[in-house]
Every structure is written in C-alpha cells, then in structure tokens.
Image (cartoon, rainbow, N blue to C red; front, side, top):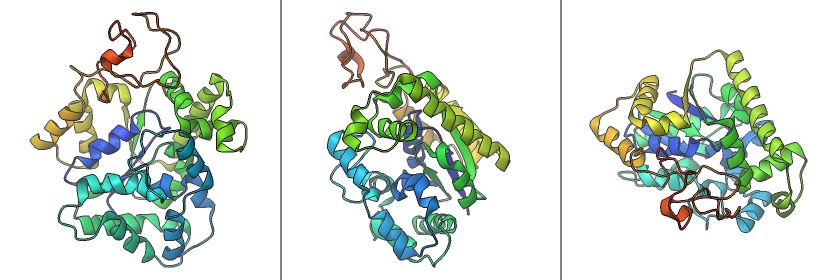
Length: 323
C-alpha cells in the first residue's frame, strides 16, 4: 500500500490540501471519503462485506439531509447528490481522474467496495484504496476528511502503513470558522450538548468557548494518538502554506516521495498567489474598521472589495488562496 492520510480538526485548510493533491499527476486524491462513510461511527459497526459497505456509502443519514436542506455547506460540490459519496468524493475524483478511464468514478469505487469479503470494518479501506490506485495508475493515494483527528486512532488502525500529514491553523481562527460553519455547528452542539434535530442544533446558541474546547479537545486527543502510534508525521500550518506555498508544498511532496516538477509548481502558484489574493475566510467579530458597517453573521465569507463599500478593510489577508 502506498498512501497518505491528511488529518486535521477541520476549518484549517484541509480542503485546500485536497485540491493541491488533486493537481499532482502521481496522486489519487480522495476527498471526504471517510466523512461519506460515516466518520467515526462506521468504525463502531460489526463485521460486514462489500455489499453492506456499499449500501452504507449510498445511504444519506437523516441529519445530513436536514443539514443540506437548511444551510449551504460550501465544500459540497454537487448539491443535487442523493448519496453521501456524490456530495464531494466522486465529483472531486471526476475533476482530475476521468481521462482514459472508461468507467465513471462511482462505478470504479463501487466495484472496489463490493469486491470486499466479510471482514472487520478496519480491514476494508486500505484494499479499496489500493484497488482504485491500480485502476487510475497513480503512484499513491491521499485521503483527506475534515475533523479526522477526532477518530484518528481508528484511521491509524485501518491504515498501519500510511504516512501522515497534519495541517493546522491558528486555533482561535479555527474555532471562529467552526462557529459559523453549519456542519461544524452541528458537530460541536452534538458533542458538547447532545443530539437534537438539525434545525434546533443550527439555531442553538453555543458559547464560543465551547467551540474552542471542541477544537482543542480534538487536537489534543488526536495528536496524543499519533504520538502513541509512533509513525513519522509531517506538519504544515495553513498560514505557512498560504505565505510560502511552493516551499511548503515541495516539503509535503518530499515527505511523500513525489516529484515537484515545473508543471505542478505552476499549478500550485495558480491556486495560491499570496501577492494578489485577499482572504474571505478570516472571520471577525465587530464592525469593519474601514467603514464601520457591521458584518452580517450569515454572510461571513468576504471577497476583496466586497468586504465593505469603503475598500478591503483590515480583515483581509493577502496570503489567502480562496478569493
């Protein structure tokens, strides 16, 4: 098996990492696969075969349906999807890996999953990824699911030979971003308060300190599990990735044993251009310091001059890749 897991708390640049991986000719980029299969919950299920696992991958949880109905989730690539895999994982694969493959990404994944024998759930995923790797003729796979640090012990057990990359961000900004993101609002409320209907959870006034605790607990417990596992891990900060993208991505590729050629370097620069970009993902409380106009909490993602009529203000970051 040749693979790498990108682990994080979420809301710290992990989606950007998947996009960067998807640009490399040697990488099979799997985005939000473990989120699609149920995240930590799937690892609590009894032994199953490939047919049962495929059924799980094709079944949208009621709370997910409610969330998508109630609030837009920016990472979702196909809002019309009726299966969890169709929200992010399959559209992400289709962006890069369809050329030269007669079967659709969904058909490739379905065949790989349904070929699995009856086995403990931890034993299924590495063979599935390796099968897809051979079909797509890439050198390695990279899986990235947001908030995977929350169940990294299970991932380490499921992928004993995988390399690890940890992306992180300023913890205050991470918690702020979580507090404004519908999926993480639900996750935090369920974790800190308990289960309730999605509509109630989204409206629940969870104190900000609870988002900070949700984030810090996940980070602390996840990193402790990785230390106990003992395998090497490459760490990269979101801020560093935005400030010196080519340097940081070259270090990531070196850790993974992949080349950093001129074509890929140009593609990285096209996505992350610190000299020209403004930051829509830095979330602030209070009014804009340029015009004094309060920010609408429901439109907290800003793009350049749209930040306020008077200009870009000070709450923009020239190192952000998402403008």
